[in-house]
Length: 295
Image (cartoon, rainbow, N blue to C red; front, side, top):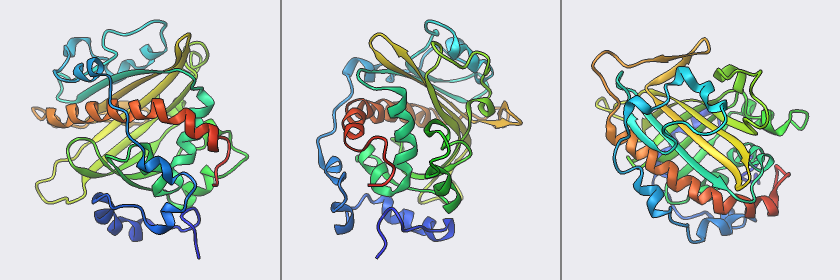
């Protein structure tokens, strides 16, 4: 009998299963037997109220970071908007978030982004209230498990297919992970103390119950981490409606069309909740399983 770690689907076989995953069923007997199933049932910490309140209203678009200036994230100090969201003048959605993780290292983050896509349960325990499932192609899985590749590089070129609710209903989201060079960062500056590690790429989200009225657009995702005296600092940026075209950010929205603000705010709020959980969760699961890929 195959275990959750060895059972693989083609995308064609996997996609029809997402409707059931979107219902967020209880764990199967096989999943309950996994050594990390206990994390699925524990109480989820709530975000700091003051932090969460910063996502209540849009920030000033003139202070938002445009994707063409992503290398400003490698500057010392902070940018005008580190926590907030808005629609940019071209209609695209902008999101920024910042959380500090005491006791977390870049190595833990690199391990997590390689370890968690290997099976549904690993993704679900990250944020059980809104994570439904995840899928890798056999080729992606092979790269993730290739011990000759540094952990920080294993996601480069790998596509994660996730089923997730970003506060606007369950969606199937395809996330293509990039190297920082392919993402557009200046690699002469991509080093300590400006950055410790990175996870990012571009994605496309479609509602699980997609119909002809469904609205969808690409998005650029950036998680950049750096060491601070208080702990590892996680700075997130999303640009909804943008994609990378030959390494250059490009707005895909027709003139006069904007990403719905409810979708931008929804993802901003989800990000705060998801990574508040991450802050409390990662050190514990790394202490138990860190450094290993199979469990």
